[in-house]
Amino acid sequence: CSSCPRLICSSTETNVLLLHRNMSRMFALLLALALLQAQSPAQTVNPPLSLDQAREMALKNHPQVLESQANALRARELTREVRSANYPTLNGNITGAQAEVNSRLGAGVINDPRLFNHMGMGVTFSQLVTDLGRTHNLVANSTLQAQASTQDLQATKYDVTLNVDQAYYEVLLAEQVVKVAQQTVKARRSEEH
Image (cartoon, rainbow, N blue to C red; front, top):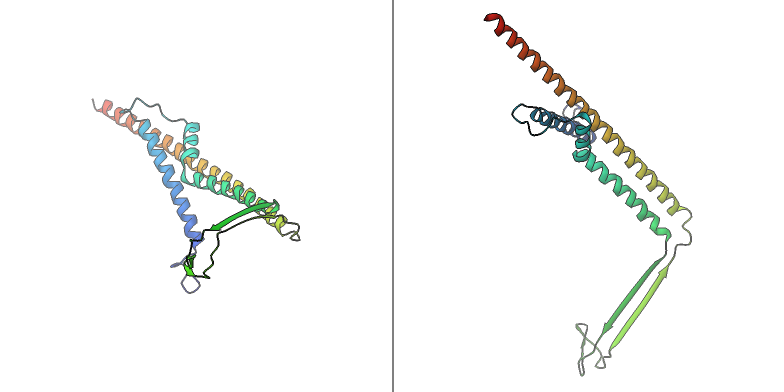
């Protein structure tokens, strides 16, 4: 807002960007906790996740990746929709009415005493001949938007992969710190005895 101080009111884009960053960090933290849980001695059923497995799981299930995939698909379909203006269209209409004998009501209103049964049909065929390049420019714009959405999807995948890598290595570091602490406790206990 222009009337609010910068520290109090920030733009919507900044809020959305911060929300996405926080969601990525939270997802990475949850993945890290899942890795720790998978590697805990109480659960020996599941082997620990490798880095490639963690990446694959994140790319398959992360909400930002799913959102970007849906946006890229929507952009490709919008290109098809815009391109459809170049193709011919065919429309058909059928209508009919039946008159009751000696009735003055037809289609809900009082009419001439002589009502007749009638039926009508029509077909319309239309083809765009020219719009002086407007459709071509719309298709080009839509194609570029689809390419941008695809690149946005790739950037989102890179971002998620980076977050997974950071979380994975933070878990490995935390495990090493725990092992060193356990060895230190074990060494001190052995020195006391």
